[in-house]
Image (cartoon, rainbow, N blue to C red; front, side, top):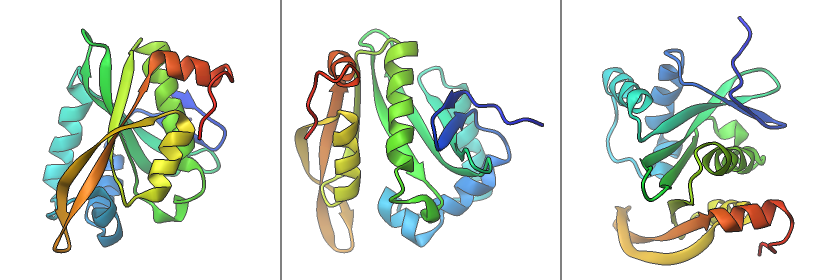
Length: 188
């Protein structure tokens, strides 16, 4: 069967979540290296993963996609807009590349740009925000390149390895997104 490509970039495409994605998410959310980057604190069972994904796929305030490689249709991660507020026209952005072989290759950046296009062009949102560890320099750089701005710092927001870690609140507004894609906004 030909893969469904709901949103398509050069190196990746986003498609709806399927039952075949349960194993990817299960392995990803229980992998030591990914657990560390996503600040997860306990292992998840297959039934917990299935329940979580099923809830997200039917929640009208969540739009979740599986990130796939355009080269071979391999599922490599997930991205979502969660807590969508259709009155305020705002949402929270989430991304997880579960296959570390695809880290630092521009996949996260391209997936982020596809989701912003969807958020502003399709869902007609006015604001997309995210939280990211201040120690995640690559992530912060990727989000800035996509047009997000640091709006504040959540001090001691998470606890990991006997230390409290600060998180940035980053956001992008509709007008900033359209200025950026028209080449009018200079990104640091």
